[in-house]
Image (cartoon, rainbow, N blue to C red; front, side):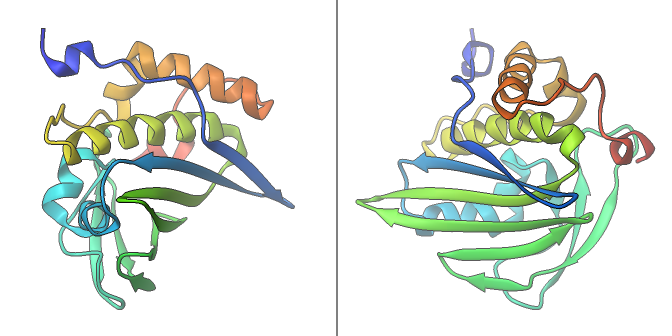
Length: 190
């Protein structure tokens, strides 16, 4: 049995939702046993993003002003978005917009480890799906950085995965929302 076949995500944790009027922000926190510099590389380097993120990048996200094409992975028709990196304070804060979703990554050193926090706006109807998806992505990222990669698990492939389905239900309960039955409209149109 491969590491990927043995992978089971832990329980839903480290997530919260902030609501400001009609806008919802999903905040996910994960402690990684790796230095901020190593985590920063995984957040900005196209080759590393290809191993864990729900999108591919055609350039580095590590420099303010860079315009990078981000392409969703796993969608029936990939969606390409041009994004401009608006903040890149290595290895502490990274900001850009991915297809209408503001993305803010904060890296905080503690000991030799990193507390990684993702802030992203998301349609409230799909907030549990987003939390479940990022939870799995963070697990895959942690394994990649530990030298035991299992390959990314995103999009429809993730949604078929029993661990993702469990997480989606757990986050929905935690956030007090209905468990969505399908992908967000934007993903259906892509």
